[in-house]
Amino acid sequence: MLKDITLGQYYPTNSVLHRLDPRLKLIVLFAIIVFIFISSNVFSLAFLILFIALFIIISKVPFKIYIRNIKSIVLIIALTTTLNAFYVDTGTVVLKFWNITITSGGIERAVFMTIRIILLILSSAMLTYTTTPTELTYAIESLLGPLKHLGLGNAVHTLAMMMTIALRFIPTLVEETEKIMNAQKSRGADLESGPLLKRIKSLLPILIPLLISSFRRAYDLAEAMECRCYSGGKGRQRMKQFKLGVRDYISIFIVILLIASILVINYLYSAGIIYLNVW
Amino acid sequence: MPIIKVENLSYTYGEGTPYRIQALSDINLEILKGEIVGVIGHTGSGKSTLIQHLNGLLKPTSGKIYLEGKDIWAEPKRIRELRFKVGLVFQYPEYQLFEETVYKDIAFGPRNMGLDEPEIDKRVREAAHMVGLPEQLLAKSPFDLSGGEKRRAAIAGVMAMRPEVLVLDEPTAGLDPSGSKLILERICEYRQKYNSTVIVVSHNMEDIAKISDRVLVMNKGKIFMFDKSERIFARVEELLNIGLNVPQVTQVFIKLNKLGLVPSSNVYTIEQAKSLLIKQLSRRGTFNA
Image 1 (cartoon, rainbow over the protein chains, first blue to last red):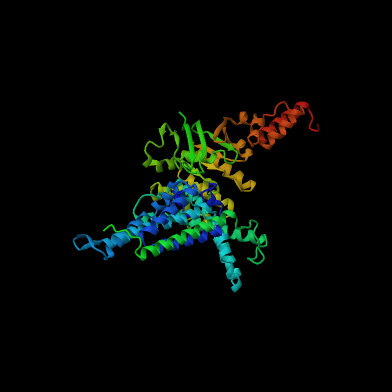
Image 2: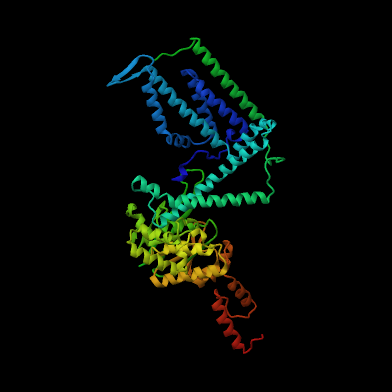
């Protein structure tokens, strides 16, 4: 049950995407997110879909793993889609019943929003599937590096360290939760049935031991770090240094091409040179 | 009729993911009413997976488990009732304590069974007495107890349900010698008082040798041996091969036997060693050999 939480879960394969520099992947993800939202027309969105589909294939992570991620937010997607369809009233009226009207503009917006959310989830999932949490925090620390010149060096390091620790302990806590759940189930705890209030109350036998053991872990970890003379970020180095390689430069080139294409398509569309009208 | 019967049990973790692991393959065994079965095996040999099947926490990928002749998964909705019959004490059970008082914590299981208050009260006091927790500790917070006391309180929490089969995963791990001796004694006492069956998983060969009638040896998800304790510990070579060992006293006697000082190395508890040595030495008619 708890194993279904796939957010932030690394999926090991030997694809090119896995071997790319994590900093690059993070920047590209941001770029893609920005472009998902400025792709305001059918053509550039279709272009993005094509590209993300290509990335998914290259990542060698089975498609059904991605699907599992989308399944978990199906409700949000459905809600956004319907709200958009109802509340936008531009374009021609397509459907009218009772006092609800659905316009062509509404449908268009709803379809666009749905596709955008799905692309957003897919592309961020791709980052977490192909990048280990440690690499990711390294990327964040490295990209926030310039802040060090503003005298925020220690804050940047502390933030990165906190993220590393948090990510590192997610699987441990999941395992611990499962263990405690099993132990309480063995004592006849009923976690799955009954009215809501009773079910919330039945979580106490799990939450209390979990909280206590988290505190214990935190103390232990702090002590272990101090024993190894940890004293913040000053003068710390990494064992694994990342350096941009040939494949990183090639990917930078491809991504720049992608961005340029979208800009061109957007321009051509707004200038009316290419168009699509289904209505 | 055996109280527990396991038939062709196989279990795979993470089916359909890249982390797929076959934890158990084709397990067949029968456990008799009233016996104490020790389970040993290397880390990752499938011991814990096996015992989690016995009270229905895990559902077999294939195969069947019978309790008193009934398939435990015949009615999946009633699996909770099974957990009152097969009580499972996890490793480091003190981490599952959560109530304000020791009393309330021990009462958690019996209360889930839907017993009435006088019966719950009776069971809580009896279980606390059984594990040797003094009455005045019952009103304390479980987090104020010592490590050994916490462990015993947690075990009492399962004993209070009076399971017919009591399963314990490493009940003595991390305890001092007197603490672990106490717990093993209490487990044996529980078995005697309620004529129940006990299954104990342990890495400590001395503990296993001391209390088990039969020993189940697991290796790589399969049953490696399942036999009377003395016959298991006679197969030293095979045990060493799979990363296990025999009790220290047996190791001493194997050496003594090689030197020709004792007639057999078939000794696995201190008591046996003592009586055998006394017999041996008095036969020679001298104690200063």
